[in-house]
Structure formats: C-alpha cells, structure tokens
Length: 176
Image (cartoon, rainbow, N blue to C red; front, top):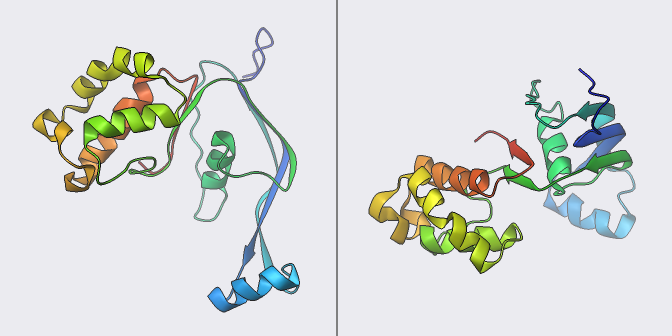
C-alpha cells in the first residue's frame, strides 16, 4: 500500500548484489592478487525494488540463499550494493546476531553503555533509558555478570531491550 502523504522510510531501487564464491582460503588469498579473475560469482540480489513507509511492519520470506539477510544488512549499512539505490531515512537499530555489538567479557550493564555508544547515544541519553532496558531484559542480578555467562535467551533479551528502548525509527530483526 503506497502512502502518497509521506515519503518512504526505506526505498530500494533496482538493487543488485553479487558475492564471490571461493573454493577455499588459498583461493581467497590468490584472488587478492588476481582481482578475483576466474572466481565464481553468486548473484544474491537481482534488481530488487520496494518501498516501506513509516508505520509499516514488513516480513521477508524466502528460501536459504534468497537474499533476505543481504537486504537487511544493506538497510543497516553493514553491506552495500554493487548497483542500484538504497535510501534509509531515520535511526536504525538491528538484531542481526544475538551478541552483535556485545563484549562477552563485560557485564550486561557495561554492554548497555557500549551498545548505546555504538548506536550514537551519549551518557545522558543512555542513563535516561537504562532502567527501562534493565526492567525489559529482566535479568535480575545477572545484569552485573559478564555476558559470556548468559544463556542465548538472556543475550537476546538484553539485545532486544537495548534496541527497542532507543526508540528507533526502523528496527531490523534477523533470525533472533
């Protein structure tokens, strides 16, 4: 449904992405010197176009290797297209991997600040949402323990609590 009153918050226009497929690490190293000559290419995206408007919730469904994660990585700025145009308007928060952006040796509390800094927040902004994150994550006394001692569910709750409480314009979730 195209909403003419507002501009899209995410827009892909004829986006293409190819990855090189190397037989092994030796072939990957050799390709540095041959500029990938003779290396097989895998087309992950073949001219993808779509628009997402503010307030819409969108799910991307497809087979393994269809390019779902590639699209999400491009929205978050982790990956870039070979051609085409991507426009993202607004603050993006992402849960691409359970421990993305976490230091496993730091406590949950320390990671709240680390992740906040990585998302562009300052001390005052983090302090303002700190208790909401702690309450949402519901980790109890584990908040002061190293994240490496957390179960995968605890890591996911902490990551989600941080990302949702920064009040992003766009929240990207991939296999979390």
